[in-house]
Image 1 (cartoon, helix red, strand yellow):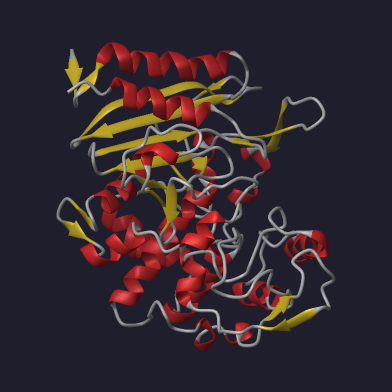
Image 2 (spheres, rainbow, N blue to C red):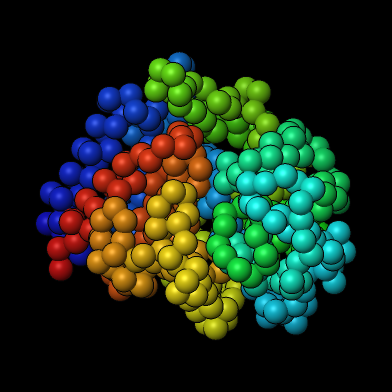
Length: 399
């Protein structure tokens, strides 16, 4: 039996493998969705959205999607570029004067007061490609890591975007703008840029210009009280015991605060069905059914590698991330299937960007396929679940 070109028996192995992670206690629960050629081939809700209360996972469970927010912010920037309100090569200081005179560390791990002038202004393209010199506290080195932690401690509560950016401006850049890829707060800065240009909050812009046109009813920066019952508990991993511990519970979640900082780099909550709509928009080069939000050109740029050969040789997250994939605008793109880490299963041209709570998705134009896996398990160490999921999905194709 086939459905959307899949073997039903092999899709059942996807379900069994995901159930195994639940039964072993590695995750509380998981929602997976596989879409191909215009139809949903499989959607599973396994385990629990909260372990302690044994609340079952459901297809409409709300997840913190973390950095899966970044492609949404990127799409918003591309919409503004199409409206001639921005340009890829434009220095952002025109709208963000706080970033007009950045300083750059002489040594990325060195003292914060040993800096030099930036050799070039920070551009929109630098921010879109994570080549502006910013970092996160967990991607910084030496004193800069502590400085990031101090500046951003508690920033998600009720701080204004202007206050947040003024804090960012006190920190030196880790690298010269445009010189190398380094993961950091660049997309959050793009979120501030969107608000400065449009005069709207980021949440309002996303809702009116992206979510409502795409029918994404459950995607937002906060969860209303009436919907907290659908919100999954988030877990972290205790470094000593390697066991899951509650990191964020719906009963006292910071995502329940409507005034929390709207971070374009990682603040959204969504569902598998909602994110499918956005992924389909990008897979179809800017159109979902009768709704066009972006031009072919804009989406093609998002799905094109912008890293130079030398930049791809530089390690990221401790290994050579860019051997088989490049980085475009808010997305990674496979361009050498055999060089992918850890396995070469995605087709050339496939694109994605995951989230820190273990949320993941991919869109494959060769197979006309989207696969989404949502969990709530934050861990710095590699976790093989998404690799297992995607490999089995590809193995199930049978046409």
